[in-house]
Every structure is written in C-alpha cells, then in structure tokens.
Image 1 (tube, rainbow, N blue to C red):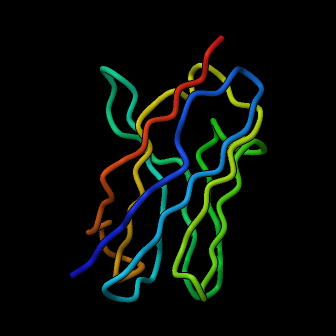
Image 2: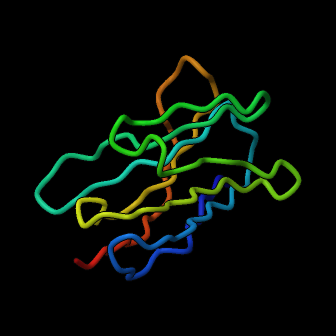
Length: 117
C-alpha cells in the first residue's frame, strides 16, 4: 500500500522559515513533488524532484525561497521554505508518480502552512 505522509506545517510569521517532510512507502517513484492549495484557489505546483538524479523544478513564485531535496535512504522528500510570505499560506500536498512522463498518481493528506503578516 502506497503512503505519503507529510509533516512540518504550522504557523510562522512573515519572513520566517519552515521545513516540510514527506515520508514515502509502498513502492518506488520516479518523481516527487509539492503542490499547494490556498482557500478558494486551485491546487498549484510548487516544486518537484526526480528520485534518481535529483533534478529539480520550481514554480516562479517560490524560486530562490524554497528548496526541494530528498533523502533516498529515508525515502523522504523535504521542502525547505524561507522568506515566507502571507501568500504562501495554503495546504501543502506531497505527490508522487511512478513514471516521469505520467501524472502524479499518489497524494498525501496535506499539511497546513499559515504565514501571518
């Protein structure tokens, strides 16, 4: 059974930092990513990394502030978020896909990040 379990969300002030973790189990993946969904908005892509090579991609809105990384030994992906802004407030979801060219098939339950002004 595939499981993606996020942790690390919380309340932080503008300019602060948080690190999200996503522990994966049940199978191997080609790529993992973070998405987020703010109230009243569609879910949007934040960052991704390939599992083997560690190639990364970021949404323009988080470039230079967020860093995605992985620990292959722990089957865990991280999202280090710095210089947080109120507009980063959202539920953050971890996602994974078995094939690089396919859709994100597996999703975590989400973790709330709230940035106060």
